[in-house]
Image (cartoon, rainbow, N blue to C red):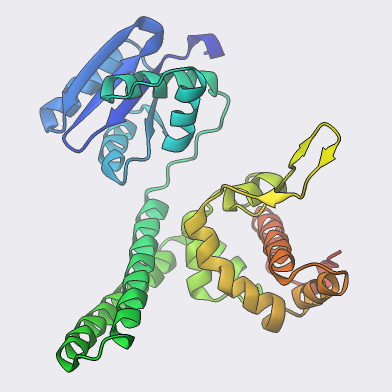
Length: 319
């Protein structure tokens, strides 16, 4: 099948329905989130020989539809809604509703059809749900602890203590489920073992990277750095040469591994520690040096996973 033979459908996912648009055929369809509605959508897509279904990440609503379509042998791609909206604005499409969004998703997918689709991995997706749930509970616990420290009421503090105890118990359950999921899934366990071989990276950090960076070992070092949001981007125009800045990327993964990277660069990882100290000696600000260390670590992990090798400090001379 050639590039011109591809028929793409854009699907806008709502809580109780989807709107689909095959832009090349000027066709639209709305289907409710019911068993009958799902069968109706699949039959409609097959009738019009659709080869790829593209939808935005919609807070989890898209997962059920994506699963159904994959089971029906359709290629499914999940895209960043911010990119689609920016694309629509750049095309002068200011209006926004479900039908228009489906058309914009289809147009976006057609325009950037060369972008690779991420291989569907149900085990990794389940792991990511567990990891994100753990991060959410930890954030909740931190906020509640902060509130408790600033209240003088004994009754409120006791209530907070009970809730905090319950949250901590649930976090422990999620951590056990995360560990069990990785252990029971050979390809995830292998990636986790490689990541944990890096000094400073323990089980929690490896789980975050296994869940949030499935591309490691399959993409270039530049792409790996960009995906996590530590790639420097130029700020030049004409003769002006501005400072490079990092931007974009998967914030939740970056935030989850930031402190372990700090520990690795300042305490635990002698190779990275020497690199960090050299950057500081050369006048780099601590935050800039830490981001550079994070980028180096991601590059190293990308290489290790691609080669299926564990960390060996003798291989790395960081400059």
